[in-house]
Image 1 (cartoon, rainbow, N blue to C red):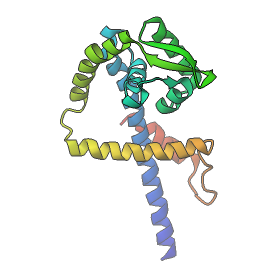
Image 2: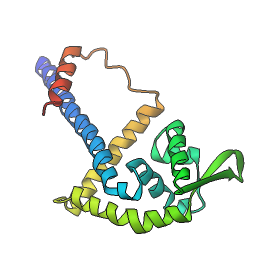
Image 3: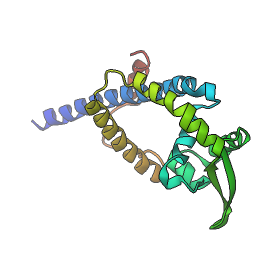
Image 4: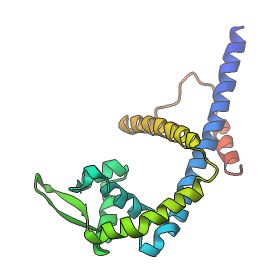
Length: 191
C-alpha cells in the first residue's frame, strides 16, 4: 500500500512537472507575442511595449507627482539598468522628464511630460484598448478575473523565489532523473 502511495506521488509530481513545462513555455510565448503584437499596436505613436508600461505606470493617480527610478523599476519588476536606458530614450522623445528628487538628491524623479500625457491619453490608450479587445476576444469577464487571480498567485510565488535568491534545490529524496525533466521541456516546445 505504501509503495502505491509513493508511486502515485511520483506520478503526480511528474504530471505536475509536465504541466508546468507547458505552462511556462506558453507564458514565454505570450510574453514574446505581447512584445511583438503590443508594440505593433502602438508603434505609430513611437512607443514600444516597455514604453507603454512606463507611461501606464506614470499615468496612475498615485504617480501624478512622479516616481523615483528605483520605485518605477520595482513597480515594473525590471532592473534599474534596463530602465535607465529606456527612460533616456523616452526623455529624448519628450514622453518623460527626470529631475533630482527633492526628498533625496541621489535619486531622480521621473514624470510624464505634457507631450507624454497627450500621446498616452489621446493616441496610445485608444489603440491599447482595441488591442485588449482583440487579444481577449472570447474571454468572459469571469475568465479574465480567474486568469488574473492565478497570474497574481504565480507572481507572488515568483517574488518569494526572487527574494530567496533563486529557485530552491530539488528535493534530495525525489527520484526524478534530469533526463525526465529535460525530455518534458523539449516536448513542450513542439506542443
